[in-house]
Image (cartoon, rainbow, N blue to C red; front, side, top):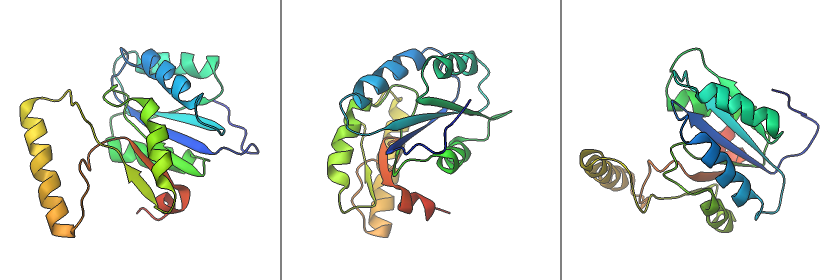
Length: 174
C-alpha cells in the first residue's frame, strides 16, 4: 500500500470489510463507475476487519491494479466502529464518505448526498430496500424511532452505512 500524501484528495471513501469476498469486485466496479461521474479526486480505503475468507487477497489485488484503492487490515475482528476510526485517521479527503461492502447501497447515490451536503456537516442516506431479515428490519425501525424521539431528530435510517461528512465534522467525532 503506497499513498502519496502530497497529492490533494477531495473525497475519501471509507469502507469496512468483513468476509465480503463475493462482493468486492462488484463493489470496486460500482465505485469506479459512480466516481467517474463526480468531479474531483478520490481515494478508497478498505478496512479489512479481520476477515477469515479471501477478502484481504481480493482487496490487495484491487489495490495493486488501481492506485485509488488502499488497504488497512486488522489482525482480528474489532468491529465496524474501530474500522471506521482507522479509516478516518488515514483519510485525506475534504469530504469523507462511508459505505459498507455488502452491496446494500449503490455508490451512484453518493452524488445525491454530495448535492445535499452544502451547508450541513453530514448527510445520511437510507436503505430503500434492505436485504436484512424481518427481525433486524423491525429492530432498526424501532431503534430509529426511539433515537429520533429522544434527541429530537428526524433521521430515517441512522444505521445506513452511506454517509457523506465534511472532514472538520469527522475530526470532531470522539
